[in-house]
Image 1: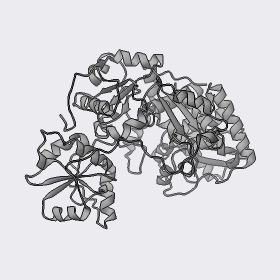
Image 2 (image 1 turned 90 degrees about the horizontal axis):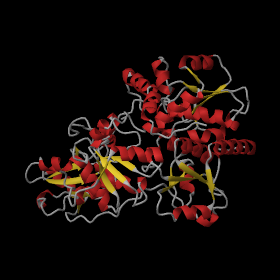
Image 3 (image 1 turned 120 degrees about the vertical axis):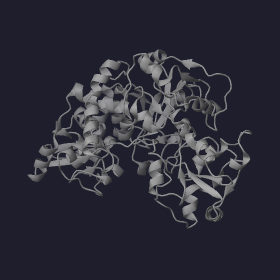
Image 4 (image 1 turned 135 degrees about the vertical axis):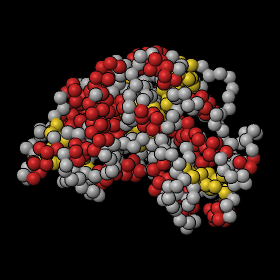
Length: 544
């Protein structure tokens, strides 16, 4: 039992068959996996969303905006599901249950489990290619075209940060939702071949099929298996490139993108609402509603509609489960802040509708809704009062030099590896109580994370009367960012990282240090997803 667990009346349960039936009938239900992302990535139901016990407060209000939404939590016998459910109840969620039998119960019922992360989106991409025969070219053929000086453009559909890490030589960054909006200016000659790539398969397929669905006159093809396929073919990737789509958009290109995207959205039966319709959806307390702005991060920060969170359209299709946890929820998309709608919202909505979501595009005069600026910010519960108190960075330094304190860093393991308070232990919040119990007698635990937010929630877990006062952790003021602001150094030593962390799944398509076996295994897994969906039968995917 963790320090956070405080058990009351027994929690009700939902049967696996009830969850699956809700998916098929398009009823609202959220199925949450309380384990860390690593174990989650090894086996989970199709629409299960990763909400680890360690990070409940950081995720719940954005993923689950309606407090009455039906929520079911599970683990695989580790003991995380019940304390996660209790935390959700403490945050105000009123319909929280446990999955009967946990993950083992789901499997025993004969239902499918999936590997990896963002599986609904990845499986859907394979479903699209299977049904639409999305055109693609192998890496060797694309390389030969480049070497021959052929008339082609290579458009990288990933986030710009991913593009900068590694990219196809000569490629430019055009994140997925921007493709139909920008392609007419990037490739105005209909004889130009348009090649779309990502790191693996999904965004290449969806991006290519977006252009095919939009009916652009150019020949279009996905780079088969993306940068993974390029690497496995023995070809060299570029690093650190800055090539982006053009900053300006011609009137002709803009009109063509809007016209073509609108036609695709209409074919997908995307719904459209004005501000009055949005008010009606907001007033419907029986349904979960997500308001998402699909533009670039820079555009969102410069000005956006109040209440709309940022979710760049290509990433929203690629990783819907990172933004929406309640299967059956409503989604409203905004694009042009002057008129609501636009080609990015239309194209994104067309894919979400095919993924089985009820999706609306906001359009018309939205000036009455107001305008905000600034970066996207998580919706978080109020920070708890912590009785044990805080400690300033330089006061902590003195305690550390005297051996009177031990810092425990609750940030995610990649950030810990990148830099932490010297001597700090790494821990997930779910395992924190066990680590504190092992500290030498007389050593005071001090919690930190990036900005201190998660550490404050975690410290409140230890305020129960049955937890010894001398072991109740202090908080580092300002978190690790406060330590740095005080002019103190960070360390990259990993001798207190412990066992290989399982809080973050190592994606075989990100970074530059993946083994060939891992990359090939990932591609092989993706190619098997169509057969798995056919066995599953609960996805409600359709392809226009």
